Length: 458
Image 1 (cartoon, rainbow, N blue to C red):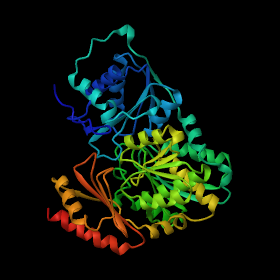
Image 2 (tube, rainbow, N blue to C red):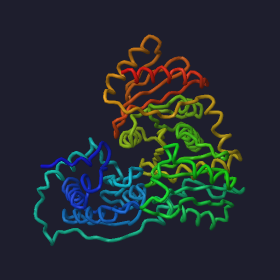
Image 3 (cartoon, helix red, strand yellow):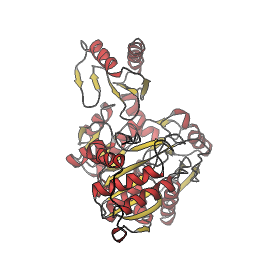
Image 4 (spheres, helix red, strand yellow):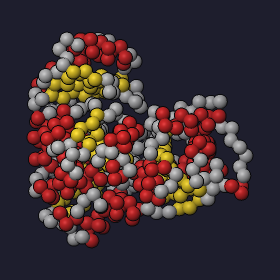
């Protein structure tokens, strides 16, 4: 029984040919069908050149397991989330590798209610069945059906329900960079809604056409080298805001009117405050990497901040437990109760655009005060082989001055003027470090230098 190395902590991702191919996709479909026993499931795929064939092989596996398959065609991950809960069916699978290299592809799996299927909620069972590859012979009389459908109108209706178009009374220019990924067709539909409402919003589209060859590089605006074209377009068009997506648009990244990239951490605070204006006293979920700004904003706005382990499966589970209205991670994943507690890359920018319209302020005005109050380092990554030893060494060196310590996700240590979180990646062989301070950028540099020496000498 050959191990399938494409199964990761939260999803399926692997190199094409060796780790993921049509045969493996078929086996994953059969395994999902046998383990979950769904009556009906929705499938979709991003714009990668192999997504269509992998999706059809997956669909064949599902059908041979007796599952009816609805295919929404080219789509982003959140369109699968939406279709699953909107249609009230038993699950969904998106074929996507998001921001991974060209020679990769993968899948994200959910069950009914768009609940994630990850390592400890069924993914290992699917893996075990797919690896064993000992499926019963196909009973043609019980084979599932296949149908192509569209939920695009209903999905865009849902997105637009988060904002009030009558709030857009003054001209706003939006630069939107789809990165040649799957976002473009949704942006076009949203633009139509603004035009129909005669809202004075101009859409300036960059790398808009879906193209699985990625002529402008893999879209991953979390990397500084992937931000230039969005920044340049904001400057060139004197836009109010820049928005950039990754390949399957489950994350969106924002740039202010000065073309400056805004760390996802500060957008979390901004959105938390917006939701608390509408629902005072609500709970807001946040991750442990950077926390002080979010806790401060949420507390002052009369909400309840709740910390969760990093990662979409953990955040979604905690949001359900707490019935939280919103959850945000500094990595630009934003989760919404009314979106079945799932993450969306479309809802955040709509909400931020509405905030600009309602408050009559620029994005830099909305976030600068918070950035000055709680400056942060941004995430710094180290490739190491001895992460556990390094974390223990750093903890020991800071123990005497530490005022608070947490192990929610990796190690978090707090001091009077700064705090840091150090953790291993759930998906890559990396040590990730985030620091923030109370209004003191200098202390960040000092502590980063110290931690850097500790790591390099280990």
